[in-house]
Length: 128
Length: 238
Image 1 (cartoon, each protein chain N blue to C red):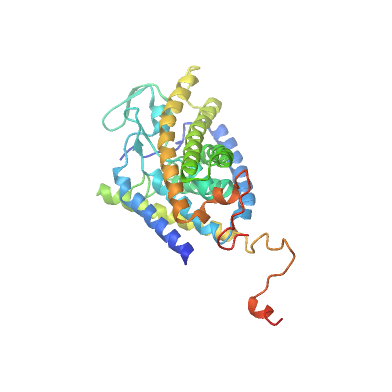
Image 2 (tube, helix red, strand yellow):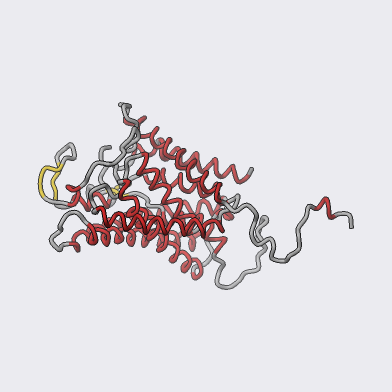
């Protein structure tokens, strides 16, 4: 149970970060985005108004979807929208990654055959 | 928050180059599955799921950097390499990028290979090489661990950013008029500052985990100090 205690605790921290703290994140473009915007000018709505920069070539995302841009489509409350999308993302990522890793994990502990001595249940070997 | 796209978007790199990197990323991830299975046991599998979920969460936390109007966020390569090892760690970062591209509209699906190559392959490779080197020469103290995590995180972020610059040289869709150095410069400077943030987050997280559950830090298990110390290991690990 000790293992799962740590996992559950860690997940709670991740949920808190993605669900609440995410609302206090900086909304400035990140290092990549800002480098690609170099050379262009932008208006208040973040639309390109002039100049020339790599970001002009940007095209629509193939999927988008109801959680696009880390929000819930149709939810007007920004705080809830960002927070809920973050919570869903953490749970989804944990389920997908944890599930996949659990499925491909190796079943028998390797290295146990090093000495060739079969380690059996103490209850069955106590006869001697 | 309108500008919450943090990975390479569609249209930035041309299709053929993106396709080549998709093949590169796919091959690298297949290899990571093969190697990672050796590491993945009943203890590591849930931990790796947690690491992926944690990276997703912290990537949402853009922090301001010194350059005005620019933010940065965790990439997570050094953190994953430290906690679950290079092979499983690369898969953790890749899962995060796939979830972000498919569900959160962040990073074009056609651009996934580029993003995975930069952050899951280059970022992890650089980070783990540095971790392997530094953990052997630095003292096994919280400070030594923190310095290792910080340096590995910082350098891996800057090199991963240069991965993008290389990709842009190969298939960037805007003719920069031979001024690739300008892009390389802004990417390097911004990611140097982002790397400092990445280093602080990585060091804090790794030192915290090492304090609570040292057995869950892959790098501490896998990388023995240069001089073998005969301290009996706790709990079933032989």
